[in-house]
Picture 1: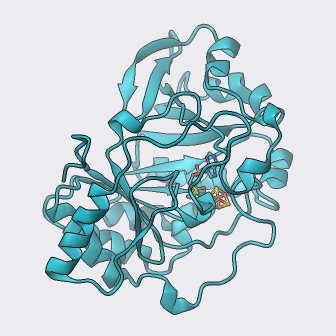
Picture 2: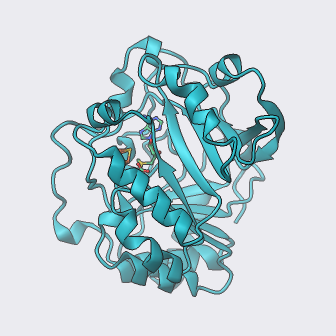
Length: 316
Ligand code: SAM
Ligand code: SF4
């Protein structure tokens, strides 16, 4: 699939649920989300049918996300079914790792070779506060389980939040010195509850280079610019959705858990796929790709994303 601006669309992010077992302050309202009527969430057979069509049309990489994907019962069976789709080259997921200790082996066996794990702080009290009640130790056990079953290299996603975790930049980078880990700092986006954070919370990723000047650039991977400590085994990634948008290289579509295709994260345009099959599904996919805007509006301070949904309802 190619959009109207000669960008090849090869990546689909699939949100399996809006629900989550954490309540990160920048992502979820404190009350959580209204429990969706069961019928509003795509059944796994529907997800499989949509992914199959996406792959037929040229998607090569699928990331399962949410909400928290691991709260969907039977996830390994879905992963095995998706992994068997001819032409799909990479199946990954993004998780908070709370349930990963129990599920890592089953997911690996189902063909999930790598996971991205969100971890914003190494301090248990700060973790409990930012996630409104989460247990850091459980997440660390989840990370250890993923490593133990060989889901490597593990990527840790850290949303950089001024006044919350910028003091931990050196400690987080240090994790990459003797471990085959990639720690990826991501700029906080003015989306959902994150939009209400004070201006001082929005730090550019260049802050990481100021705090750890010995980092050396080694290239890029997808939307991340990659760095390494001079004697580091792992890598540090900087992802800059706010200070530098990725629109020119954007290769992705998002599928929400209620079956809408979002051509752009920062646009409220959504194309419903539910109930479509065969040629109708194919044509609607192509229409969604044709609707991909050339770029989204600048997300400079004070601006709120036009994405229309908080991150837990889009699939980050
Ligand atoms: N629950 C899973 C997790 O936390 O990894 C997957 C879904 S979560 C919505 C995906 C990613 O979006 C997480 O890494 C989270 O930190 C990030 N995220 C959520 N809200 C964000 C915001 N306002 N700005 C930047 N990243 C955000
Ligand atoms: Fe849940 Fe992930 Fe959002 Fe945190 S960032 S509330 S873990 S969906």
